Image (cartoon, rainbow, N blue to C red):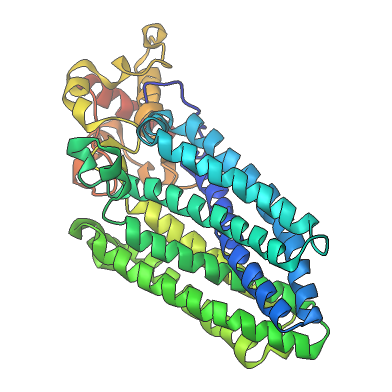
Length: 422
């Protein structure tokens, strides 16, 4: 928060991060699962001397190269760019605390990209054994990238003993690390099977379509089982107050948790029907419907994971607006605008401009004015006096940080909100 921030007025910076992240997570996890899908299938095809199935696997590798190497890499860079703009303080903590983890992940990322290029461009040019080995390198690069990043993501929700020790391993091997890793590996395998339905829909050879469908069905079952195990263990590894939020304590979170379960169940049953049971009826319409359900299911889970962390961006350490818990007393005394280096507050001559600066410092990261979690519909019809007491009661909302700053800043914020609420 004390860094220069990019805070759009009409939508939240969090929306930008979410839009990029959901696409990246969907693509990246699918690429990891597809790496395993391809290399195991190639081994089976060569062992059985099945040239048709081998050709089917080769067609998959072409699309993997395009989607994983291009879309995955660009959205990954997009995440770094957006979080540095919207939440630089939290980004700084993640970089400095886990610098060697990030360095290790970049090594596996390079292995991932190099091996998929080699895997694709060496089809039929090297021995089958060496080609399969390269495929395993691709999968290893992807799975280790996933595991390394997952430890950092779960740290934000459950930092565990890191809060007191600030030890890198206490933060990395946190309470939700293992169940989340199991769940994400499961999702990766599940998404690979979901994507494979799209490829299968274009296959005209009925015997090949049945064989590829049934092979995909086994991945579907394994992926769904690991996803379910990981999700259940993740739920029960959360602190009690967080778990209660999405099993009835908060309507929005409870609904998102319910929708995730429903969509994942539909995805499993629908995909199973057209892979193991009736693969010859798989067509483009059905496969696109399966992919849409899969993307929606992942989106609900990612939203749930992010939202349940509120009001923190790093639980019990930093609020979602970048304010450290350790500096709250100081900011309540000196004012929140004394901390921000991007607000040249000395030039502000009126109360409304001071209030707007406070809004941008404390609220705009999560709330836009009119788009996505908009503030205006929530405050329409309220006076400055009403809003003052609303702001004062934020401390009782479990999903929002309390107001931090002086009484003058609180009054200025209420005046600004009353103006835009008209």
